[in-house]
Amino acid sequence: MKYYEDVEVGDTGVFEQEYAVTQEEIVEVGQRWDPQPFHIDPVAAKDSMFGGLVASSAHIFAIHCCIGTAKCDEDKNIAAESALGFNNLQWHSPVRPGDVIRSKYYVMSKRESSSRPSMGVVKTLTTLYNQSDETVFTIETTFLAKKRQ
Image (spheres, rainbow, N blue to C red):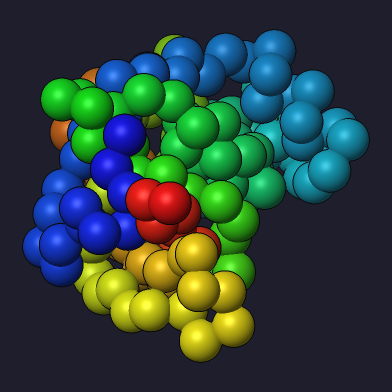
């Protein structure tokens, strides 16, 4: 575990967990949260701009959150306490059934917290990519990181 004091701007980490995306899950999430034909109907999706079924943006963000709680390589997990905000969310390539999603982060900045002396504020750029190493999603996350007590 990396505490705030251990984090340096430019640090990187790769999350060990991979996330396999299924057609069933794409349809289920789409039906509940974003019922567009290209999220819920494999036949109708063929006539869409995507040419097939794709995961919704909410689904991809949820995958980001799921992988983000997993263990990083070489024990590079940052002791995150609470997210403060998300910026510059970008969906680069569609996520399709059968894709296997992985994630890595890059530390963009850090500073002391002015309101919580036991915490620091860290900003990361996280990239999700598929089994072909295509970037599918990027997001900047600002969060509180624990300090050593």
